[in-house]
Image 1: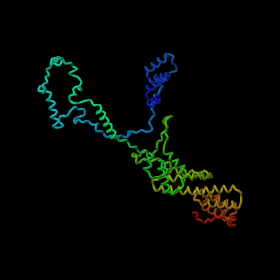
Image 2: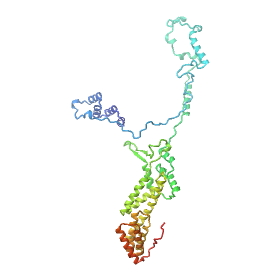
Image 3: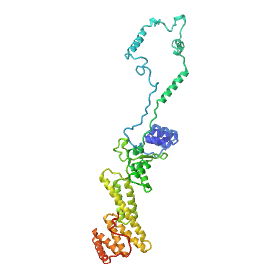
Image 4: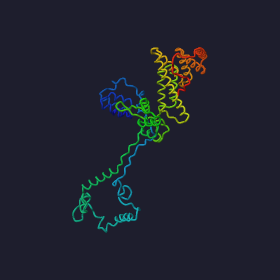
Length: 451
């Protein structure tokens, strides 16, 4: 860990020291020599007992590159660290009313202080009245006829406190210390935990998709139940997990440490206040339009299984698309209607293909014609509607339902298809008009609005 820390910090000296202490003298010598630590390199070489002439294959220091710490992923000009507010106790201040560090009252603060200061100055000159003679020879100790040692005259001040009734009471000191500790503990204010990014997302938005990104699945389901009327969320489980996973990034720090999960904001450059933080949106109008095009291409290529999956995903994802303008909202409604129609139409066609593989009975023949007819009434794109009408025309004609086949052919001609397709449809109309009847009892009426 020390070596890894020195690599992160770019500390070459500490790196050489760690290698030397761990017995890796060759690596330590190489690091010291490469980075210009000549004295350290010589000391390592002498400790290893190797002559400099015996060292071969030493790389040139000119090609060496200093390893510097990686650039931080999150860079802030000013880090707003939380500050702990602690009230001062009674013993934190000074009892003196002068400047900090002053030994006594400050002159000029009040008349009482001025008088006290003046008395202190005059006291230096009034020593004679107190029977204090500055001319006494302290060293000779003439007073009383006995010599006084310097230690007696300049001894510990505590020796003269006995007459004043001042004793060194250890219990009093312990009591004062206990009271000071209790006062400091009473004034301690623990820091309050802040709100996480996910909690801010949940507070700042009432959209179900943002609640899912924040991990608040229960609230998201309640919003969808109230706003959209969804009662079963089994089909939405993959979308829930996809939205939740896409709203955070995984940053691997070290092999022995847990990966960090960094929330991703959709307005990282604009949001300056916590009340503006919102999660990134996975589903939007642009991605929905692209998925619609993929569904169209799969339908044109008759890849109905793939197209059904695409349109179902689009239908479910539109629930989580949030827009800002009324124009975008109307486009989302159109996408919703298109997806619904294609899911119904492709499901009908897949069912028709399944019945076509079964045994050719009258019941299955009736079912084939009916499913082909119903497919033509789904609101599809123009080219897909033409394909559906051609399929229904051929199916009905094959099973001798000439009346239905003539109706499909006429609808196809009204859509103005390619010339050769239009000619074939007109011929079909001519043939079916001669035999205007259906040989199978199909349950189909073209005048049904199918709503």
